[in-house]
Length: 242
Image (cartoon, rainbow, N blue to C red; front, top):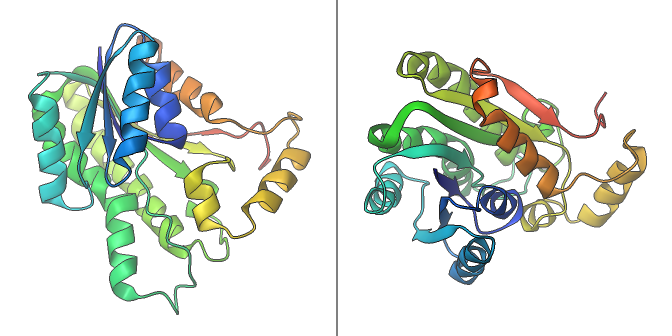
């Protein structure tokens, strides 16, 4: 099996790389933190996988094409594509620099389309594409406007892409998680520690969510048993938002 994890060097992306590692080719994409990408590739190899570092910015069509060109140099078939890339831009929409906002939306949302189009020749019947989202795509979270609107856009892209790709036997779904202690979450919220503590305390499952929980859901949805789960949003949060 071959899997590309976009934004795979940290957080949910890293956990997903390790979940799929044993016996598989894992393409770890990162943009700027190459050291973290190299560490994840090493961890993949320690877990019994074949790790490949793919450095590139998927926030433009050209950048996404370059990333997939690197992947195509090693495989002609991607079984899974997992989109975890996010630009954790945090600012009120009426105050944020519009160039920064546009760039953030491209990375956190539009790049899903860029990646899928660039990967078309590598996707076969049975392949799956996953987009990682959060509740901020539907609820207003102060300072989360750039990320939330981008994720909302990508969730819509998931629905449209799923209909276009279903005749090819390719599935596209959204996995939405609750609050997680990741670098991106801490970059997005100045009071991240307080938010995470409240989420853990209020979770009816009586424990905080982990990146491994999210990776486990992706693993389940990638199986053949989920063949007809298409264009859906599946949430993993321990029941926090019920």
